[in-house]
Length: 459
Image (cartoon, rainbow, N blue to C red):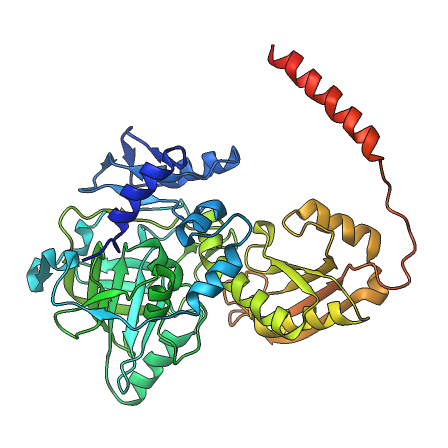
């Protein structure tokens, strides 16, 4: 066994970056306290990895906020600052076949039948508006019945009974397709839910890969070595050998289970759900397992986890098709619905081509803004300045109606049908205004005086 477990990562990361890990020794409740800590720290501009060893009603430590910091994700991937997307794409392109083992840490304890009680798990309530406690980090593993190709995807889940979960497949992605195939052949779909694994496995589960690409192999690329897996006892699904917890079961295409409302990435509570049920037949846990939570709502963690692979994919696609594209950014202010693209336009219309490409490739996007390469797309203020000074609504705006979007968009209909907006805030060839400037000599004087003043204040 190599160090592919979450606990291996936590140990090594805390040694290397102790200032980026905060352990909360005070006892906290499972009911919203952990979410409140994350929110209060975020309001102060702080996004540390959080460990809660003293959670009332929990039999184990709770770890959360793993992906709240882009700098931390860069470190996970071994990326230099500012090279997050290039590094992700480079590693993901090196996908590797899995390495199957006879056993691993997650086989340390295996429960089945009447020994299963999902209510024994440390289930967190994230928001007062939620239906109840939710599993937010659950990665559902499913495999194609014919070729064994696998799919990973996140699905919020609520415990409905001692042996069942209510879950939602509202994104109607590859797992939904596998479920429809199972329904057409009159069978239930075997699944396994991984709760807690190496962060790079969790990041791979967010990749938007084609149906015939197995995200477990992408995880191997991100790890730099084949993902070590074991098979689940009942259905033989391949899951990370170093997982913290794995729930094995089946989705009955004909069964319904109440699920929602839950605080979603939009910042609103959503009860839009496919209301599927997972019947759990096996619970696998490693000895001394910790519980991994992904902060819900429009938290930095929730948005980054879904956004980083998407940004990397969009940059690669756009640069391949439109070489003038120099950067793409999905701002927190726009949840998953807004995107900014920086363009070094060499030919009139290239920015608009890039805007239309984004709207066509990413079904979540509603509003995309193109700016010149000298505008900082990571700054809402800078992009809004470009809109204010370069954009003319009658000339630079495109609206496309009646497109499929996200069912979790509260302004869209229940299926997510939406309009999309493209705003070209580049200067264009006829723009003749001159940007204000301060000479470098004067700036040097200003820096000296500002530094002296700061020294006076410190003293």
